[in-house]
Length: 428
Image (cartoon, rainbow, N blue to C red; front, side, top):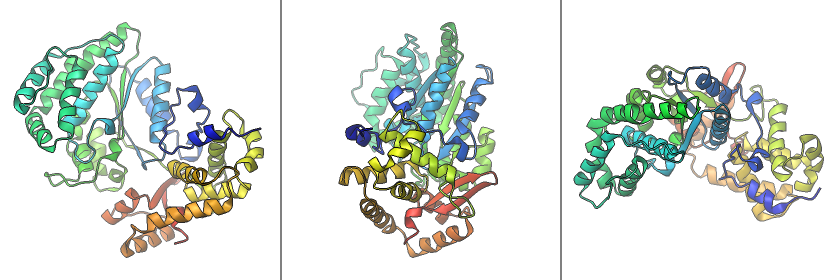
């Protein structure tokens, strides 16, 4: 069976998110739930579908950046749509400045995306509160923005686009909006979400779901309030984010799971955050995770030969790598971090055509290891040795940095969480 090199190259692009509702992308999708310690997406889905549309739910989802959260959330969207729910999915990083986010920014982004999605199916809502708010904002900013009679999504887009690249204008807008947060929230609920649910019901829909992706990417910067941004947004202001009158799924920074704010976070939202861990390449005792390794190899070969079963494609490994051992080495050194795996593979494909040689892979690994080790201090090396030895992780600020920098990965098994260092660092 001949390898389509161009398609393989494109399928291995680490920046590409699989959209499971598309037939082509579905060929590349591997379900890792059985080795990740739980069917997390199924749990999110059940919480939404088993409750009445009149009972809004708010759920939190997190994991390492690049571990496959967006792919899983798009799978959730597809499955909910098959159950006749109207789902609004958007990447917050497209419209927000991740270095400086406030609750009003998130609420306005949700209002814009929901109204835009509704307008696309001929549901046009014009909340009176926002029409007045737009006029006041234009006067405040003293900048030419025509918001007369525009749709809600267009009005918010015009204002946020104008302020996104100007810290001064954004600061002015924020100072104006901050004391009006509850009014904005009330308007979104009463003038947008509630009538939207009624009109969707008339169209035979079972409810409205909003999935806000990439909020886990907000910077861990210190806010003027004295709180770090993740804690400020989801703990100090979490109550407001929890008041939207529809089903909501927020992605949150992984750092919150390992901070002393976790108890307050859980109290604010009334739910435990769902964590998407790494795919295990080894078990807690150091032995190889055969199931995890097999699924990772399937993921690579599905990109080389989409639509071909693993029973067949495992006999084609030597068309893609010089030996099965080279593919195993690639999967093991990725640590089960899906984007890491694809990044290493993509770098190999940039250097040579398949079959990829062991020498090429080792050269790419060495380059990546050098990039990572340049950023590690002597204190951090000591902490990494402790994690490697104890397989545990303490809620200390320095440990949190190791997690954010992807020097340490989290895995889950029947006994709960355990940790290990990024395998690419082991030889260092």
